Image 1 (spheres, rainbow, N blue to C red):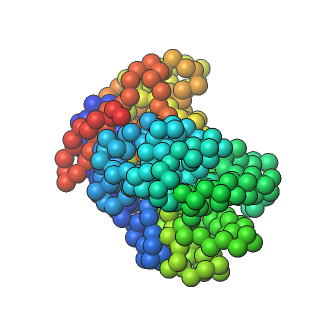
Image 2 (image 1 turned 30 degrees about the vertical axis):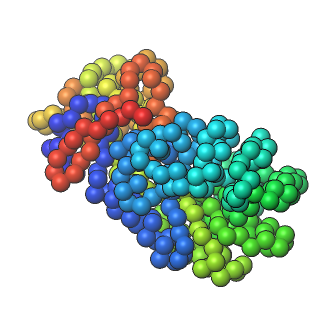
Image 3 (image 1 turned 180 degrees about the vertical axis):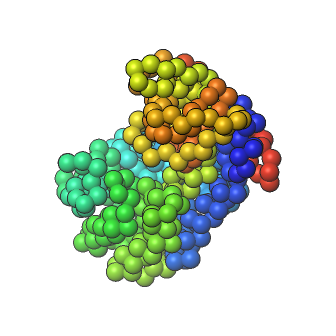
Length: 386
């Protein structure tokens, strides 16, 4: 994107590079489909629920992956057919749960109350469902754990017997058929090794029970398209290698739920300097955006940034602390060392701002930033409401 264009939109704002978005969406879906004859990609709505983004994904053949009744309704408003939705999570409502299954959505059971709701389905036909597997990362792949005892509160545990209890309950319902295992679990590394161990663990459990799966949903958590990270193709090759140990690859439908992998690199956050102060041996720069807008969990320290100068040359400053617009002392985006002095009117463009930023940005101090779409040299404002 040309630097000149970043001087024009209202700040703070997000700018979507439509070409980069299309490339990421196509890259991921193509990588999976080339190795899996039966492959389904469902965009994780929780990662970025922008209607403009969901519509673009739908137009490119993606399903919507939702985790609540509200997200289910949002996907419908964005044009997804009910049978083009993957429905996960513990926050399903009874009505949307039953509606989704009755209309062919890919619904994965998460709670025991959902198992009870199955009795209310139409008994005149058979309804396929999936079950989420509980995964303890520390047990199956300690190299990839986020912390000690990286167990999960989600899904049904094979080790405790809860998975078998749910499968047995489904087996007693002639109008319901188990055909899908849902594996979604995040790892610290997002490595191919983790996905190999995850899939090997799950398929091994099914083999030990004499079950041949029709579908497997490996969830999301994949790296986005950045140097030094596994490519989408490499992830697909890893998944295919594991599946072939257990069954012919053309007998299984692979379902993936990419979020970060396809939206992160296509969003840039643009914020403008509104004030500069000098005291205590440092230069304090205030911008009209917030760290919340680009790092809502306050974990990142690796922002890729461009400075869009308001004009003229500026002296180099030893230390600049860039703070956000909120009235929180810890709202500090970054510290710059030995960089040209920032002045009111200068803009900072922070890349890779597409994942979980809009979702987790609170209405604290001010409303959501504007969103612009960049395509063919033009900026167009799109709705940030959902």
